[in-house]
Length: 240
Length: 246
Image (cartoon, rainbow over all chains, first blue to last red; front, side, top):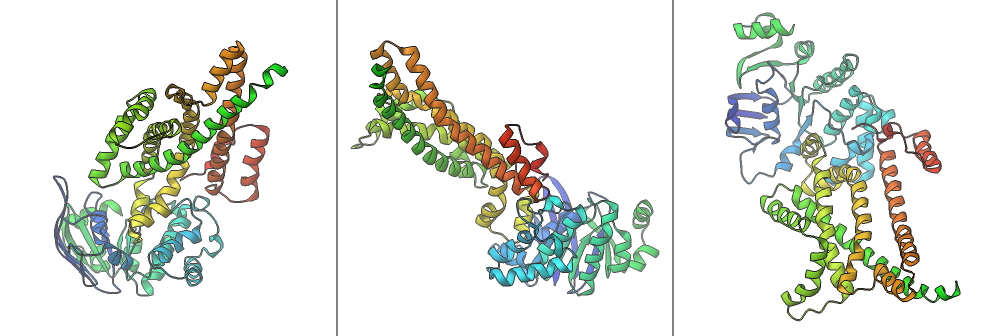
């Protein structure tokens, strides 16, 4: 589903990704862990073209992201993204946040879109907040709306960029619960997270990144209980 | 008193001319300024470059010179063109005002956080939809107060069109003041008329700001709507937290 070969990304002279390769299969849940500045978020942002790719190849659902003739919108319809800072549209009610993309990009009818949007809000446990503005919601609620908004385009892959890092501890659980259910339903997910508990419980595979490369990857049990490399062990000791 | 009533019609005509001129300039200057402001904030280098020259150039020249230029020089540059004093004045003021509005539009668009652009893009919104539904509505909040301020200043600056012989309110006041030998009285009257032209625009600006802040209020319940309405009535500022947080 996602195939990354020798991906390089530089910002000016600073090389952030130094040749990453990985394959992510349909319905797989992959957690990216690693110290800050290791390139996790940059990698995620390359997958939906928020960052241009310096070298290497990324192919998602058969679309080559470096093809100059590529329509970015076709890829982005297929790839949902959830941000650390939620980035809800503050001037729109929750329901309108969820409906905007299907109406304007998917060109779907209002009635069907609204029905779908309300279903998604129900799914993230916020059907009673449809008419509220984002600023009236807690961080955790906003993030769940952001998940519903990303799901409204029926993506085949969901990217999560530190979805719980900006949240109060007591609202983290609700967001992780929604993500867990999504994983159980078979959504392909790539998650950058510091929630080791979530990675251990939900992920099919954990990738440890450092300094722009993949250092080690494996099943959560292998990675957390018996990491092979000292760098991985050092990192896990620091975060646990 | 009866003697003065005969001078009301020329003053009223002048006031009417000022209102017509200002309406034309407010609409044309806003549209032009908005377009140039978008170009200033765009990611296309050529557009940014041309619009930067436009705004910096026009903001660096006195309005008086612009008005003299559009009246005397513009017809020479466009062979066969004949402009009335109203047209020349309107063109000059529009150019002047649009440059200031463009800067306000640029600044307010750039004030929208980067995350909003990214969220819109990640959802697959194209350039037009992104600006139409996500960026511009948020920029409007920041844009409207200074925009109204520029238009208010423009109404008063419009008195400069008397240099090209256009009989607006100020020019009418000058003529009547000289005829009656009562310039002080006439100019107090003229000043009052300017005030009553400007006041509704200022009120509109306040009303629009309140409306925008309500739509972003923390909870859209009755209290949030009532508080600004009441504070409006008693003439105090609505509390700042009505703007909600981003």
